[in-house]
Length: 404
Length: 227
Ligand SMILES: Nc1ncnc2c1ncn2[C@@H]1O[C@H](COP(=O)(O)OP(=O)(O)OP(=O)(O)O)[C@@H](O)[C@H]1O
Ligand SMILES: [Mg+2]
Image (cartoon, rainbow over all chains, first blue to last red; front, top):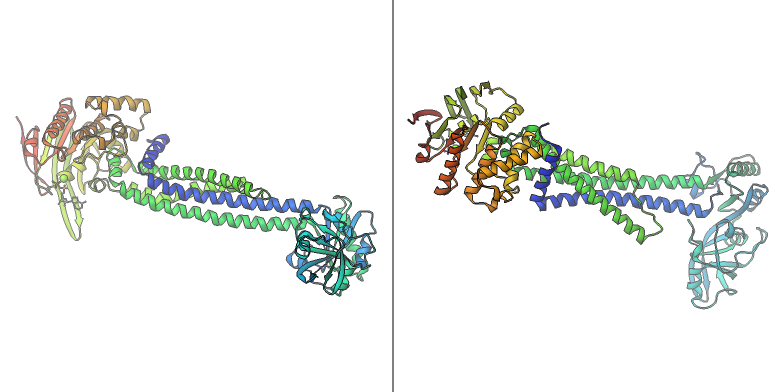
């Protein structure tokens, strides 16, 4: 090798500084590409840890029983929709309490109804629940009490309302102890749910909670939406899962017609979805790197024709094919590494800004994404500069020198 | 021993469906330390001959022996190395890299030769010193006069201590006085042993050479020897 790497770098640096607008353009393209990969994957990772955090707050010992058997036994969107072969009933839920390993059981009914008071009307999600629901979901009551500890099959005209529902129906008036109407039935407000109880799947502040038997009457059904079961410990989860399936199988004439979802399965699915999302978004951003590569190619082609005389001169001074090639590839590599470096800084700053703006989303770009972005940046830089560099190296020195 | 021997050199160019014989059976011997001028009308093949001698171009047929070695069939890289070591070019339009300082321009052939940085630095300093350009070392070409630019180009052509110095109308872009200065410099180099070949339109300048070739239609039409 007749030409030192350092010389190539120094020469390339001189060429970049010599044509600043060209260099800045390419730098911009590269850095935007790298920065978007870094920021978008950071966002994806942030979303992932957000979801993880939410699930952790849900309680990790939780099992969800839904009617219908999903083929995989795992979690799929159709099982969430709950297409019902045989209904879950309050008696089913009751039966699940008879194991030491089961800590709490919460039968659940969901529907939507008009909630009204003194002419103010609003459509609201109604949750038929039980006393234990509060502790099981780690919710907090803001005012008053949650649903009373009564037999599950007993209806009672009491309601706990979300704070937003309260605002809309009562405004500044006190709500505790007041009556309101859900559908055509009257309920007395005994508690108000604040925002601390924010939780996946339920907007606590926008919901009205009534005893599960009251909800069944209201929606004219004897079935349940699902049953939440809290195991006494994480270790007992598999045993509890088996216990639930066995118990309900016995109760349902030997048919295995329920699905038990563990939080882990749900979390895994979310993880997969978000992971796929992160990959695809990162991939799209990587395409912008390719675009940057094509831009580099074009700008380098222009550079070659601008610097034809210089290339001819270098040949006259004794540069061979390889040296010219390495000079131009070196220039593109220098540019793309500078661009990638700048993009990395911009991307990390952007992620920092995201973390500041949305503290719930811990947006940290994963190492693989950063490394891949840098790699793709350098790779495209080298690849797309090859054609212009070849063209430069192949120039006929006599013609190149005579062009001014 | 002749430093350059050209034997039955032809150089044809295909222009459309016509063939231009830019060099037509050139036979020439140039001894080491010779001073040669090439004159002739435009299009007579002067530059083509010089480019061929400088290994920037290849003959269509014939043999070129440089320093006793047949260089006609050398590979691209071998030719580049030979060019770097044995030949210096001075062009009419200087061909300095505009973004590089005078010193950096002079350094280029040493860089291409793969010389170490310290060695380069002292050689560049010497070359600039010899052409009285030491105080212009850090100037960019556009901060120099035409004569100074050509002197930088000469420094660059000679920094590798080549055996042969080729100049294609070196004074073409200079005023008369700078032109004469440049010629004087080239002749001083020749006095110290370098083989000097100058292409020129200027008969007065051409006559300063010991050997004067007159070209016409790709042939050496006439040669005069001084003394
Ligand atoms: N690349 C080329 N393609 C085609 N023809 C060429 C090429 N280079 C030179 N020629 C032709 O070869 C002939 C000699 O050209 P050359 O440049 O050597 O002339 P010259 O004596 O240097 O002229 P001038 O004094 O104008 O510089 C001319 O007819 C020219 O048109
Ligand atoms: Mg010419």
